[in-house]
Amino acid sequence: MARIVMKFGGTSMAGIERIRSVAARVKREVDAGNQVAVVVSAMAGETDRLVGFCREASALYDPREYDAVVSSGEQVTSGLLAIALQAIGVPARSWLGWQLPIHTDDAHAKARIGTIDTAALDASLAQGEVAVIPGFQGVSADNRITTLGRGGSDTSAVAVAAAMKADRCDIYTDVDGVYTTDPRIVPRARKLHRVTYEEMLELASVGAKVLQTRSVGLAMKEQVRVQVLSSFTGDDAPMADTLPGTMIVGEEEIDDVERQLITGIAHDKNEAKITLVAVPDKPGAVAAIFEPLAAANINVDMIIQNIAHDHGSTDVTFTVPSADLARSMEALNQARGAIGFTDLSHDTRVAKISVVGVGMRSHAGVASTMFTTLGARGINIQAISTSEIKVSVLIHEDETELAVRVLHTAYGLDAEVGA
Image (cartoon, rainbow, N blue to C red; front, side, top):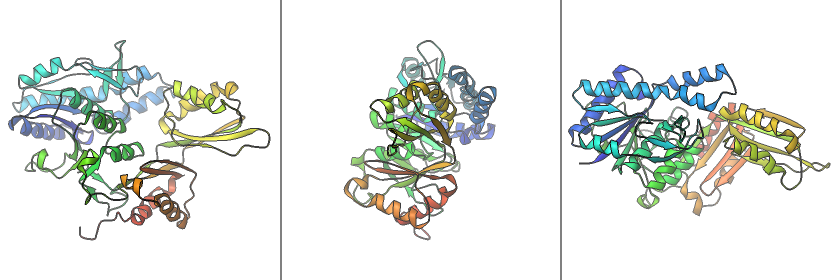
């Protein structure tokens, strides 16, 4: 008997017929003698609809009330899946985030999981029940419902898998694995059979939509084996432990034959560039910029401090998630006196393009190839950031697809015709 966590995304839960299909897939695991917990997302498009209501009500909405609104989508699908399972003879019940409970901090809209009490869950599984858990939500110390950020159901699934010591966490999506880049942009993108935690963490953080960044970080920390596979295979498809999805594993499990210089290319249009003009060029000036953003739980990515002006000031440019732009501008304007800038501007017509691969550690020239390839196509680079296994650039959003295609070819990632 194995313990398995199965997570189903929004497209898998988009309507009663698809929920019935998910129920049938879960039943196969139960019939095989496994203990199963299922984590579900809201129906496709539902969270966007709820977020839209919040933004329409107020651009500067209260994050606590935002959580109360947007967490309702997962509550609906968890209850419906439990009903569908019961209808086909599978004992099941739904567990809301506060019923387990899933304890989080109070950073509403992007809360972090602290602990999960699994005593009641363990007892339920031991009795042969399938536990259906709404992803994306938990409860703070003051008993307010919290959400984990977009894509947070992935994090919920990995956290539940770690807490209940599951043998595997299967993430069912609308794609059949992790590809070298978005196949909708590059039809010759290749599916990867294995990806290291570290590579997947970088890919997720720079725009790959397959897994949420924090879910990968948690999987790496807790050594949870994660498999990405499609929920849209036929009813006669093999069981999940034999399906050819993508396994997210430790680097020691990748043999030399599978290693390559670049693993994948990701893009992210959900970025906004902010520039502060004429910031005083003195010690502590940069700290004054980012302290109010940190206090507002806003993540900053690329940072550029330009050459100082003659009058002892400098321009500072950085990027934030587009969803945090309004709150970032508000926080900076409120701190204008302390920072001392003369003007504040923003640009949402940007995209981040990133190349990722553990092979960068031992090979030179990755950045040079990227810059040369983009320059040859007339694509201007607005900002650059790097890590040990990643190079990212900021470009105009209209050039996103061209950049991804030419880089995919430049690094030799295109699949062979007929492969």
